[in-house]
Length: 178
Image (cartoon, rainbow, N blue to C red; front, side, top):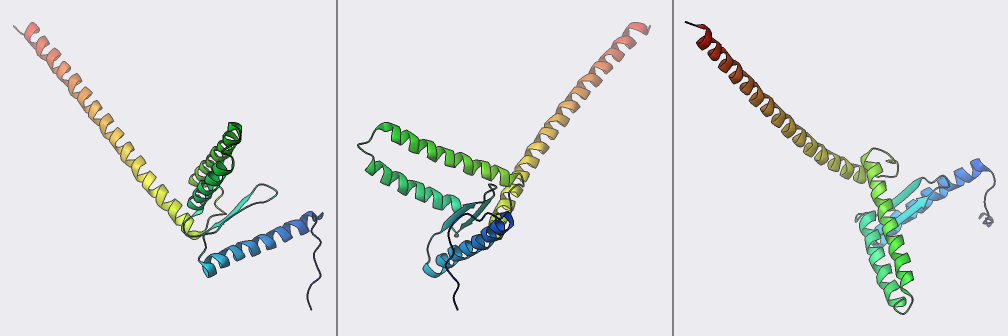
């Protein structure tokens, strides 16, 4: 026996609303994965909860590449459609495009600082770990270079002070010895 039709309206009970969101989000993510596997389609799915938490799914090409492809497609279509419209529409589109890029950069920055990692899958976490390891190698290399330079400067100053002391000592011996 089938279920009755669900009336589509906001669920007033906060707990029931959260449970329904969680179940439907999982189902939607599962369907996105299924269509990508079964139909060899590129899929990007973005979900924001009512509290602003991000959930996402992307096929192997990754969210950034799919969104870039979407932006190019949408931009080309928009340029063709709005060729005769006022230039302010293009500025609005450009603003939305730049705003999306800023949000993507901020999200990447949060990931690099260890925040909002719940939405990442294992492959994305491994890529992030690789990026961090490369960055850490660069940081350690730069730190070692600075420390080496600092030690070299201190040695040079030490030699200069030593030479000055020897010069003073030789001068004193010459002056006070008969």
